[in-house]
Image 1: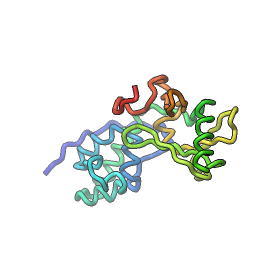
Image 2: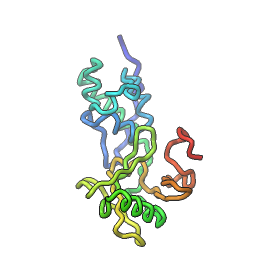
Image 3: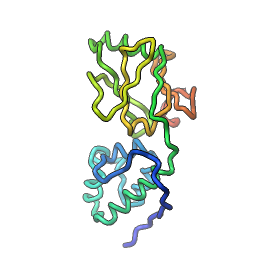
Image 4: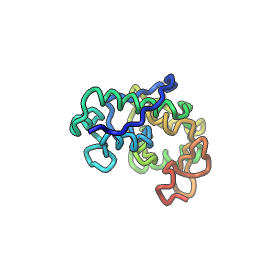
Length: 194
């Protein structure tokens, strides 16, 4: 059986991150929401599978009978899709209101001195969790008025939300994407944030 494939025109890489077969499918979909369609063309419907979002791309492909040559082709196509995305700044802005709110939550939860790691989920939203320190692969961001409050974000996360502002208004944390400031959420319309 011959599978239909869209052979993408390759461009020179402009991103520091590259998709590999060892990456978890969930990370790939978080970075490239449009990857779900491409994965489906290769016979992978990982977004609907409870294991599919945590297993590596190679493991998922192998479980579906995809050989090494096709895995290489899929990785190339995913990187071409990545290269078509605009490059985002490797920065985040933390407003004073957000920094104060983070400090209050940290005090309430007994996590004073810890920072928040920001991760993008496979639906385009963002999640934050407290952690003592960033890992060696994450950048750290602060606000001048609250210099003891730290936000950590990986290159993968910054590729998706880099250049954005984390704010706290109307009693919730909001992520204002650089090209869509003021929308309140990175969900792409999938939640009731408006």
